[in-house]
Image 1 (cartoon, rainbow, N blue to C red):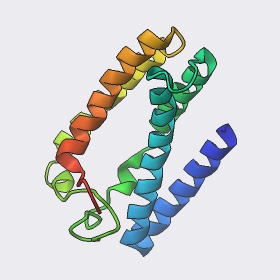
Image 2: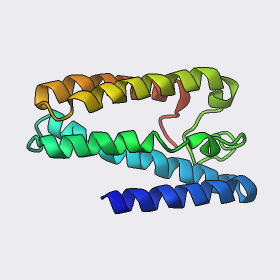
Image 3: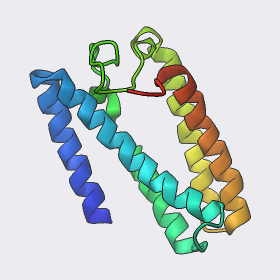
Image 4: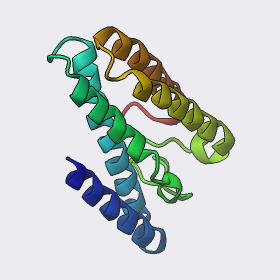
Length: 153
């Protein structure tokens, strides 16, 4: 899994650098790949928190750690102006308001990070602790999605 994560991050970095010079569709694609990795790890944690799969302290800590590792990647290059759903219909759900309210968007990112730090502190302490922390993390995601992401392509 770590190999996959490292490979994906290297690919995203290369794609984002290339895309900033070469094509806005590539930027949107790299951004979607970044959030797909986040969604994958969130799905693992949510399945455990809901009891859909057996809780494993090791797996919970790994998924939470992977999410934390993703925060060390700077997605700034994935938010190039001209890459919203208005600019690239059918390629992204990023609303133009992101670029109109970058400070608000970044504040949502900070709330996500703070909730993620709390999740990492309790991920291995059982399903109830995981569920409570994951609920706060999910709330931070929902807050951003509500304001900055279209429901459909």
